[in-house]
Length: 277
Image 1 (cartoon, rainbow, N blue to C red):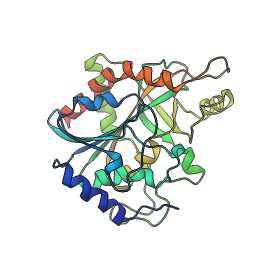
Image 2: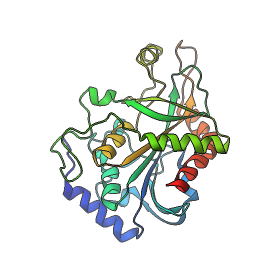
Image 3: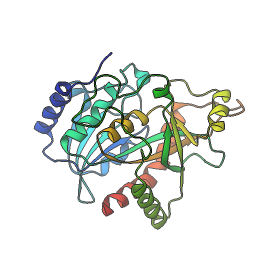
Image 4: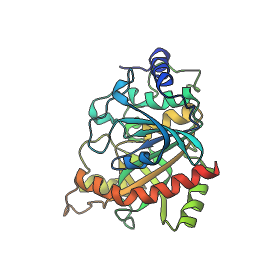
């Protein structure tokens, strides 16, 4: 098992400190098709993740793997333009490295986004959903990013997850969305392993257990963030409708296409929240 150690984390931190002089207050992870948001970062310094020692490599279209450090709305930010996934072959613990690095660099907040399929019948492609909870199906199957020796300097062996997503940030995001004229749902996200999309039977099961949107990321990062005391805001961009009856085909291309509609809405909300931090 590829456990994370302080030596691995510190090596990545020291490399990035030599390249990125800004100390971030907010870390951001951008999901499939949402990378263009990073283009709005001001006075940015950019590094490819493949240059960073130990960094999990992204191999998926719509995940450029670029790290962008600069400011947005006057707030120092560290933005991941895309992420890596469990289905790409990375150890689940390795997926936590970027968040550990953000914590070591000083980030207090994590804004995490993803492209997700709608399970809730009222959600449409192009909609946004603010996460108020998640179901950690990967963790229930034994793949928890905190598996292995506990890193005591970050948090306790058994961290509480009763408020994985910060209530004040959720409220703030809704206020900003309302003022910006952006309609936002609020609901429960579930992380599946992927890379296959769900069968109609999968989706009927997910609907039955209270899932509103489904994806293949985010939850491992949020667990590591909360273990280290970061406050988390999560937003899903709805990329496709659930195929509950087996009559439609889901493709990655439509996920990327939906991102073009989602990015302007997401930009309004994230910028608005940053203004008020």
